[in-house]
Structure formats: structure tokens, C-alpha cells
Amino acid sequence: MGLCFRKIRNNLKNSNKLIMSTKTKNIIYFVTTGLLTLLVLATIGNSIFNPEFSKRFVEIGFPSYLIAPLMITKSLGLITIWLNTFLLLKEWGYSGFFFLFLLAFLAEINAPVPDYFSPVMALVLLSISYFFWQKKAVIKTK
Image 1 (cartoon, helix red, strand yellow):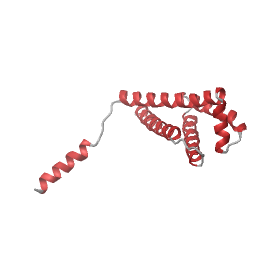
Image 2: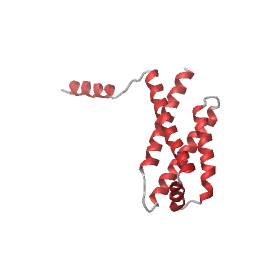
Image 3: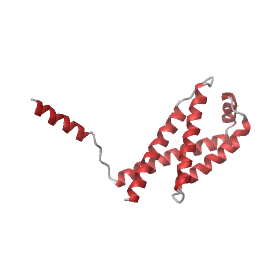
Image 4: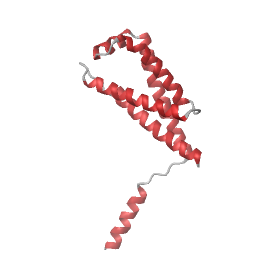
């Protein structure tokens, strides 16, 4: 009886391991990074073309003069994430976006009409993109 349960437990442990090919990891990385890029580009476009975005930014409690530097740093962050030449800058780009999205989530908590979806979605996409970028980097070094 004990042997039977041991076999079942071992089979369950082994079945939980998801084995992905390199191609699958690359596809997941590029799709999540692409969606993250679209999300960030949408916020850049909103800040330039949509005056309601500026009102919302000020309504949350931020000064309006921060909008332009944030859009510039978001653009530079996207460039560093897509370029594979300077890995340290890429790490810093990911960490910069992490803190940006985390602070956006915390700002939404204090907003009069909170919108949690965008910062949470951005954090999820960023985490998946970073995880699979690390998997890609490990594959390249082997």
C-alpha cells in the first residue's frame, strides 16, 4: 500500500514539471515584451494627445511637470529592453519599469476612482517578460 502511494506521489511531482522548448520560451518572451511595449506606448500616446490623461495624473496627486520626463524615461526604457547590447542597462530598464508600475499601482490605491487593471497588467507582463528574458540569457550562455 505504501509503495503505491509513493509511486503516485512521484508521478505527481514529475508531472508538475513543465518542459518548454527554446522556441516556446522565445515566443512567450517576445509576445509579452511586445504587449508590454504596446501598453507603454499607449500611455506615452495618451500623455501627448489626451488632455484627460493629464487631468487624471494631477487628480491622483502628481505635478503636471512630471509628465514629460516620465514619457522620455519610458521611451528610453523601451529602447533598453529591446536592445540586447548592454545587459546591465536592460536590467536597469526592467527595474525602472518595475518601480514605475509599482508606484502607479500605489497611486491608484489613493485615487478617488481607482483603476487597478493597468498597473497590475503591466506588472504581470513585465514579470513574465523578465522571467523569460532570463531563461533566454541562460540558454545563450550554455
